[in-house]
Image (cartoon, rainbow, N blue to C red; front, top):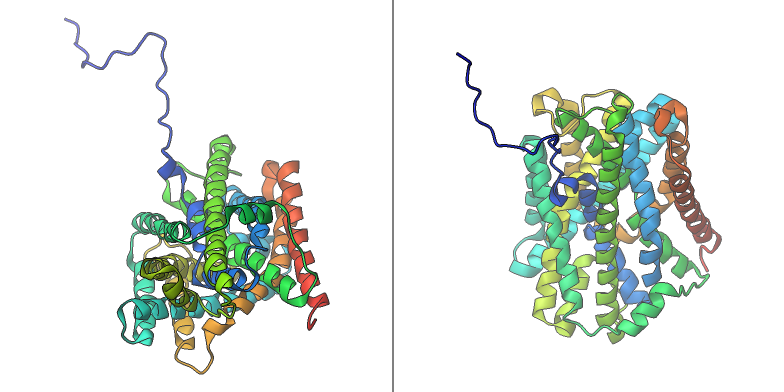
Length: 436
């Protein structure tokens, strides 16, 4: 008697079971979170200052910078996915350790200042909405961010960060409740108006430094490394080249959409402040919370509340990215166990660095040093520091010694070097016109 086989669903003869295609939400990950974190309270303040001071004249920078931003972030992701190491780990492997120390030191200093500024802006925004002590809110936001990073399961934490990206749409909504001259906006988007003055070039460097920031490079590369560690079927591409086509396609979609959202929101912040503050002669805006408060009498309570809530939402998204990128860079430089997927007792130094960076950033708000007023200049510093980091990344990713058969193809290499040259030219222009 023959044994009866269990019944299965019939499949047409000769058919092959196709692998399930990932959904868009599954594809979106490191690139989306990286792009969204770029519009942190520090960035909101910078874009608000630019819109208030210069109106629509810098709108073109957001369109111009998008392909440059996409290229350099895709390169960052490729470095992590191919090698299984982050930016700092690869720099340590291929360049003199003194160079690595210098870059990591500058990265950590800039990130801590940004952490303090973002926490201060979040505390001020919540005070505007509900009243109460801003410094208490600063401490609570900092503590909450550290606890989530240290004790949340990595996959759940990434899911929370993805949902926090929805807070960016607050700035899309505000644009449609104010009067925006779209014809003027369209003209300024495609016809650059460049003034060779210190204030104008400082604004350009600040916008580029906010948009193309070193901490974004480090974070996205490391999140690709985390994906390799977290997914059972994933390996660095240098060890699993058969995965390259699918992974590069995912990285490209994730990065281009993430950076597109980032620049679109930044543009809308510029448009909102240009249409309201600049149009009414209010040009001296130092912080994101000041921008929110200034909107209230001009655009109404709804616009004010949405703008302020967006500061808090984007801040909660940016805090772990700033602290995490610092900890990743320090950890790979000094040989620690790193990774948000690790348990706290398996990566004590890494999580300690996250906590200390956040603590120092929060502490700046309790000293006479006002980190909020340093926002604009921290963006300028980021713009200057980005140049050597980008140059080393381009050199690294273009050579077979580091990337093997996955060194950059000509198109991505050209756009990546163009992004590096643009950042260098902007920095040189800033110093050449200093004091004018």
